[in-house]
Image 1 (tube, rainbow, N blue to C red):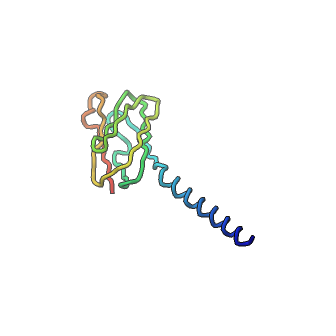
Image 2: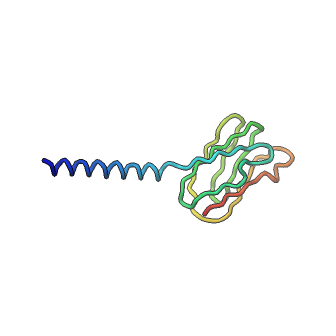
Image 3: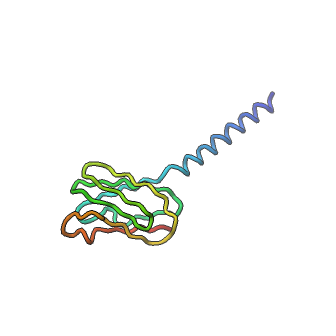
Length: 117
């Protein structure tokens, strides 16, 4: 009977540990990004290769877009609404993200940098 209890306790602890590890791996890191005429804040975002990330993008200005061409990620940014963009960087390096919806004079300089290590 004592052995059965130990086995049951060991199994339960293993299951809890494994379950916690799986949850930790699948939950993306949240990065909040604010878009405003003609800038993203932050304009440099450090990420890790293989780590899932969700960008929470907001604006209070005008309709904009956020495009990360190297990762095939794109979304519309609507004033007053949060745009969630989830992806997992699969390569290391320095990559540009940019506004791809004309938002007025200065639009052409509205970009930022992803640094993936």
